[in-house]
Image (cartoon, rainbow, N blue to C red; front, side, top):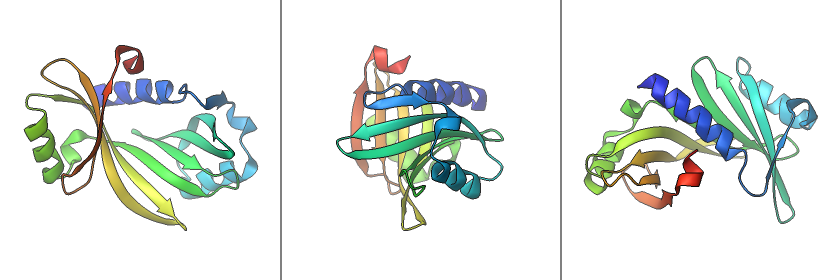
Length: 164
């Protein structure tokens, strides 16, 4: 199961970097403050790839990391402030309330990917929600954002071209 999650995570990370508004960039082209912040917060992690995301006049950098077997994406401001951390986790580590809510809404679904999404404000990291990609019994793929208490925040059906 972990191998499957790892493979899917790699595909999701690769696809995630190619979203609209994002431009893949070489790791050596990242601002020094971004690289320094990533290395300080995740000293043992290897930077795998990066993207620059621009929305209006706001720019953020997304850096994909690998720390041992753990894969994660880190969002940072150009001045090196970490704003968000998405960490791939084993679906067995989801809270019981999350798995119960997902099982109730999507009976017989299989989990393709589970991530902890941690919001970072003023350097303080707080679990915001879990992002789970499921294949439901009807063979449709859904991305579900769900809080630790089992409250579903958002559900989005993923189309075929988004799952590659």
